[in-house]
Image (cartoon, rainbow, N blue to C red; front, side, top):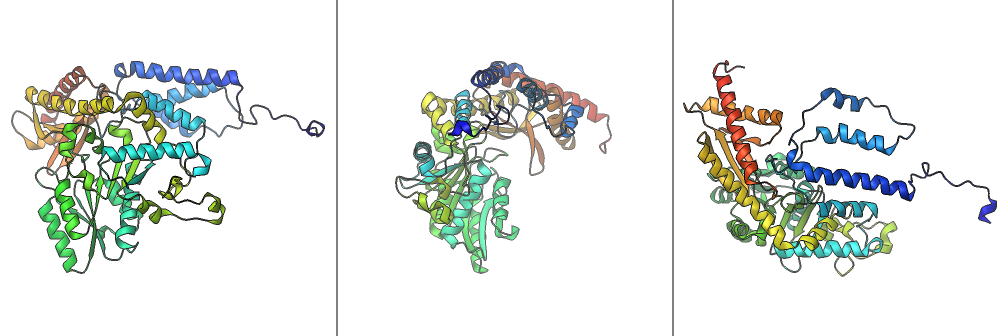
Length: 493
């Protein structure tokens, strides 16, 4: 009957399809480009020189009515996107927190996208749900959380922190924000304060406690603040600790904070966005003692677990808290009953996303292919690289170590021979721009109290001793050139 209707078959273009041979050719070309990139990454510059005219041209491209050959579009992507990108996975990218991914996880992302796996409703993908639940369980064990703990994969640390703080509000406060107070150090990541703002808290409800001499949350000052707020009729309910601050790699006194939170009936949330995976090493376990006592934890697997962006995780001490906080069940989802307390987990009830991709696949596949021992060794390399960088900086004789190597981060500043502090700050500040212009390596700057400093994060396991040596030599040469130029330039310039 259908053949008599007279309807023509859709063309491949109008049905948004390629034939098998074209798909293979396109796919193989993409894989070849990625393999070439991975093979030549260390020889490339970290930062590409920007062509602002070419970037501006992107904005003036008219909306396409007709399609173009995929080869042309792929070439345009390379020219307009890749060629203007700073390579955050480069072994000499030391700025911010480097994102050193791995090829297994890149292919896992391709599989998850290619099969278009919808990992929110058990009935639509029970295998994917089980993989995510298993991988969350492995993370639970790594971080020492109890058997009843649970969690979910999210985009990154911002959403992981937001999710955990929403759970804390529900469990501790029943959702009532009146008079509620959250505490953290002045070294906290802005994702926490922004997350609280999204949840409806006012700036006055976040107490940023001045950090101690090691840039950690001050326990005595925290106790004073909690007592003062209680005396004023406010409702302290949550402490946010950091397991590896972005500025210096400092770890707040987690064990002592857990004691205080237990005594004061406060929720302990830990932002372990980059530092938490160090629990896979002996050095990290010592630094992170007490992490296992947290009520919730946020981490970015795309940082020190070497995954492609995006791969965040939120963990909570009792899995039921997630469904209690986020479950909503409209009539059109009645046939997927089951909130995640039994074997059938519907991850749409474990956080804010209904539409959610299969992010867990890449971490699961990395664990399976490489094994935890190899991943632990890669994390340990970050500690060793930062310690080597500190030794090289000290040996160079022109750098002041501001904070020693910890959690793969060392901070430092240029030190002119005459001890001029103003000049030291200016050279250190302008050195970031000079590094970016040079392109060989890149380190970022920050402010630690009254000092302008450079910070070098060396958590990429593919960074070599030569990378560090040549980078520090380059920084010394550029700093000396800056000092000479600034000495003859008025300070106002």
